[in-house]
Image (cartoon, rainbow, N blue to C red; front, side, top):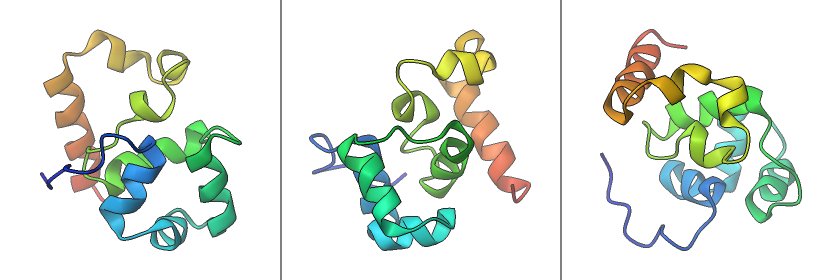
Length: 100
């Protein structure tokens, strides 16, 4: 897992952008416009639930769906509430290995 030094004071989207090489790179991975990612980063708009898994996979689990949607993640991914953290991480790695 990559070094997270310097990412503590950044939003989860900011951390994801740093991980992949910038907002533009993250936007390209997610197939959205860079201003959209910026709006997520600054909190102008929430990250759509449909994009959260892609961000989690792009960051190899460094930024999680729970971090991206702290207020309602359990509504979209109830299985994460029932699984210990290491099981959730294993599930992310399994999905990543399948090329999702």
